[in-house]
Length: 469
Image (cartoon, one colour):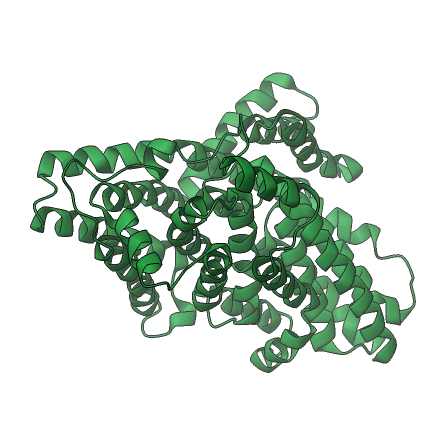
């Protein structure tokens, strides 16, 4: 196949346009994959159809841990819901006035996001699961919860990089001949302007009660009508899982929610330590989260049976019911992996980076790197893949132009988070929507103005930093 050039950009753009037009995420992603395969196959329709099927099959075989993890999350939710864990937790925090109103519920979501920085998907999962019943109780929109969980997942993970994010970036820097990768990464943290802006905006809009644009309309709808999701919305997780009430005669017990989630978090670190042979940064994130969610399922089931609110048959029914409720989100994730692979094979990221290589003044390079990286991440739906594309371009450019290396690294990391934050095909965006029980397209529409506000602020700061360096 010849270099597709501009055509390499069209599959993700098509997916985004179809998603916004139809609000059908799976259809949109499939359209993008099919068009990408059409380009790769030189216009052969039959080859494109066969390639689409093969691409999805390969995406499944390449990502079994995250897909199985996402499925079993539904089992955990079903078990803790039926055993009175969710209702018990809500009563526990409200009766003790730990969360006394809407501001407290949003503060809880934000603090959970800050405290759980081991992996962005886990951050979204725990923050959304714990805060969602409180948001519903206090008539806060699911869109707002999705925004807060999304804004305290990847931005926090990249600012507190004692996790797989940090290991990835240090590894890439090492392959580029940067021996002091840790010190460069640490020095880039205060220069990661978008992540800092996203976090600051999340706290402001979460604690001030002020909103604008589509988010303000969503909040007004929830507050005035009690509809925490838009009428006609399609949450990624079945309401049979999200709103499963306690079983008949089952008492409310907060520990039935707290303990399984605590086991899940602890087992992530245990899994990272074991798979990394004593080094958390070297551990396998996919394997660790799978072990963790399996441990949470076993813990929730064992507690329910010990308390005699569950029997073996009912436990298995709930496990399967919960897993079945996650089919929509797993399907979206699967097809998003496929379109990311198509974008990689088409060279979408490399093409976009090359377009921006025209001559420009050195002081403008950090801002341009930020914007180009944002477009790459938005188009491919992956910040990690974007880092792998853009850091090998940015680091040598910094050396040639005499730019401050941490500033250039900060610009690339900021751009990866910004583009990923805006993209409807990003796995973080999808999981944040799933964990909060919101419609994926509604989440993107309501979050985008806030993300763009942070992106504008970051661009201005990168121009200023470029002039000052």
